[in-house]
Length: 295
Image 1 (spheres, rainbow, N blue to C red):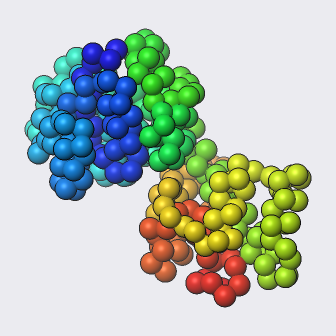
Image 2: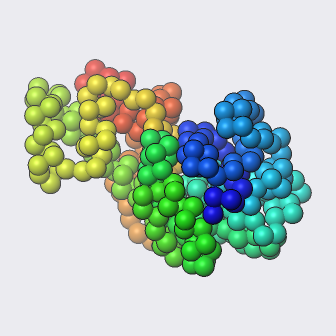
């Protein structure tokens, strides 16, 4: 498996650290592409590989291509047109890691199949640190045989790669994961913010939360950051708003009311309107704590 050449399209925080992880393990990372050419050039220099100037160059240089892009439009773009990733793509494997709508994952998989390539949706439920350490949690959708072939590679970047069914199923599960995570984050911010307004000892409040039904994974990852106003970005407000929007669109299509998720998306959209979209999702506490931006 480590003889397979690997390319990356999209080398922001997550993509770059996945590429570093694979390079550390001896995989030949052969080509890197990003709309921000300086990002690609810098990482290519670090890893000693090729900074591609077109998408088709990545496909030509690699057997397995990871894509880590921002949204539906970006995903469609990299797989569309005469110089896209699908130029001369027969036999290649695309591993698409972005959180985008299930319909877009499915459309890309169909286009890749028509070009003779195979596709897996490898949706990530982890942060930058886990990408660098190779401990991502991956929900992988696509053909089970292709997953089996790629499983040794997934084991090198993930502590828990899990095949969950079709390409679209992986995207749906990821949307629900982020929907619930975002609701939990907003709820924690409201609880701690109200505690602050009531003059409570917030460290003691956090400890009580941790020992009761108020406990959550978000309490562990974001609680102290909310108190300290330390919102260095691991998962941005802008991404949280986008992902809640994906889940809410799925709920609308299914005829299922999700008022908590709609309220959470509205909070994150408010932060974007306030110019806070680049903060970590823990920054939602800025809307609930006394004497902060939104209060």
